[in-house]
Image (cartoon, rainbow, N blue to C red; front, side, top):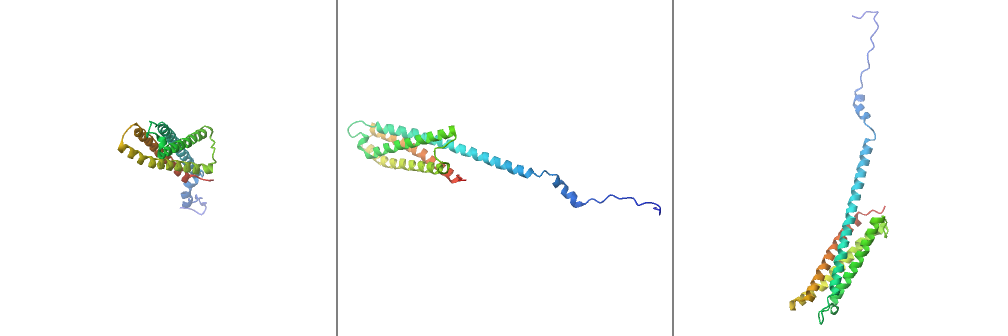
Length: 203
């Protein structure tokens, strides 16, 4: 029982519940969200670079295939001379197929050289803002010309094979098949070029 002479005992101040609730949050490192955000951005950029590199290599392979198939097709057409009516020079459809095959060969050779130079030096001959349009338009036009040459040569070859099947018609079929493979490769390259063009930024 306290007497009049006893002094009051000091008591500790009560803990503030609001301070206790905010203490864990205050202890967290303030730069943690920023670090997570920057890590996400870096991963996104690296994933984009890997995707672009894969697309570039895929286009390079497809254009190399166009180069090969169109060259072989042109060689077979140009050598398809067996005397009399068995001469490709006598048919404008085969002359057209030869011309388009050579054009596809020259275009794909220029693009393969350009891409190889870009891989080795990091510099492109075409400005970055226009490279996507140039690639897409070139691949698209090449594919269109190849399919138009095929549609001209196939009916003629079918009519010839109905009358007689010989070395001339077999060589024509071989050149048409190779030109078709060149068309498929060029059309696939045009699809990838179109996808790249849709994702291209101009900043």
